[in-house]
Image (cartoon, rainbow, N blue to C red; front, side):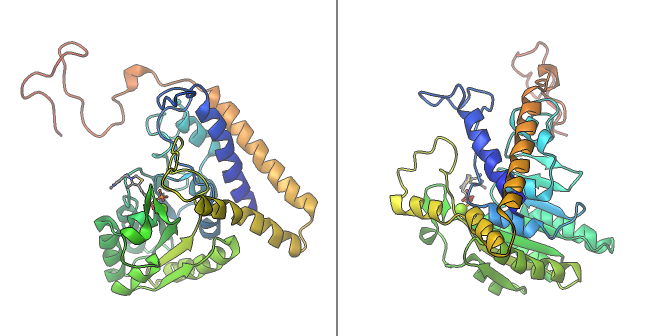
Length: 337
Ligand SMILES: Cc1ncc(C[n+]2csc(CCOP(=O)(O)OP(=O)(O)O)c2C)c(N)n1
Ligand SMILES: [Mg+2]
């Protein structure tokens, strides 16, 4: 878990450096080697690491727009994930998805920028496993800002009615962009939503990877043994802005300082030391993580960019016919199928 967490933290620290290249001084979001938005999960690492530690490659995981820590903990190919973030041809989605749309079928991982969108596919994966009599499970990660979404609530109902092997993990970082949760959600603890459905709800009140590990073990084992779904919530902390470039003018200084103080990585490092893991071993894990990150970034930056000719390949709709490239569509043109 520690290695996964330091990998995720260092990965994002390096992405920040790469992301800012060429974007300053006026913050041009489309400039530099990583154009577009970037949502960082620093402060969420305990959740991904504690849950995914119990999963096998065939177990499905869906994540939201803040996916890096979960992807790393699920074992997504770091080089191809990095190439995707840099928009390269050898990226997980041939450079067309970017950091919010990573998809790795080798380990059954997907994420999406649409809030709560990962819940229905996770229910689908769990239903498939049950119908095939396999003991795999599915896990959907989502933010606390997503728990009023229809897709989430319908997924809970479907999972409970069919007793599906799925675990929903709410990452409660107290904020949905600039919106504090108490202004938009009627429950203080997201896990209380389970009470409206026939499933257990459990909350880990502090982002301690070991506590997450233990809560997830119970939920995932129950799902694997045919005991149905669980709703889990983990208190995490958003150490950064909602996305890179967010000035966070809405956020009290104390809230930010608190997030920085309550660092789950430091907590786990101390716990490891107290349990007798030597300083050398801890340093070795950290160094190995850092080397892996550097290698992935170097590799990705060396990869070719996609050929513009392939821009309309692997997309869901058939591109409408144009008589000449760039010309307006003929009336009634296009093929909706
Ligand atoms: C269906 C939908 N509505 C709105 C948005 C815009 N949006 C992007 S992130 C976000 C807030 C999400 O907050 P939360 O679920 O708590 O996740 P966090 O960013 O805190 O990790 C919103 C509203 C979206 N992506 N999808
Ligand atoms: Mg949130």
